[in-house]
Length: 257
Image 1 (spheres, rainbow, N blue to C red):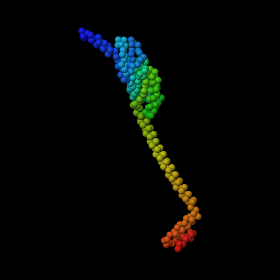
Image 2: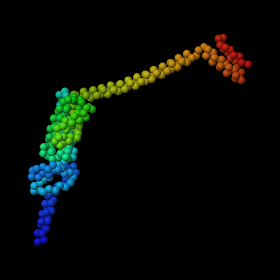
Image 3: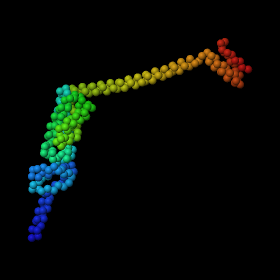
Image 4: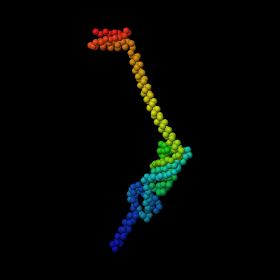
């Protein structure tokens, strides 16, 4: 009899356990009652529902990484083999819309939208641009085109990353030779610039020396030279030591005692 009394309690606990769904971090959930999808979104919380008429649909709202390997066209008509990573997520507020329009298997839709967007964007660039600093510009344009298609449907493209770009062997060698030639030209320009600066410095130094000599020669007139000679003789005559001063016929002669 005692076990029979506990039976309803056990059944009630079982129904309660089956009537609760736990939405974990990184997930979002919505209720579907008799086939009709509710617009309320549940995030990181328990969700109570009546299991006989209602079910809880959960999906991830974390950032997903979709990696693709495909050939993309270039402006000159070449086919470039590339590995692409697409980072995307569901906007938590638009989970009901995503489930209604795209369903939970939306990865193939993202891949198809990328193929279309990448073909349109990459066809505007040369193959060498995908192997240079313009890669980030190409990635940004592909991302914008994908968001233009998917954002209104509840999917957000966070980044498009072109990781491995494999150019045709002949083109890759040509690009490497061109880049090496550009680096050599830049290095030579740097050396020439240093030599020009050194030559300018020497010219300025030579002009300064010449100007100083010119100023000095222009300032030493015969009268000044004679005055300097007299001053020198006077200084010598004031000395207590015995001395003999000899000059030529054109110079002044000072005889000391």
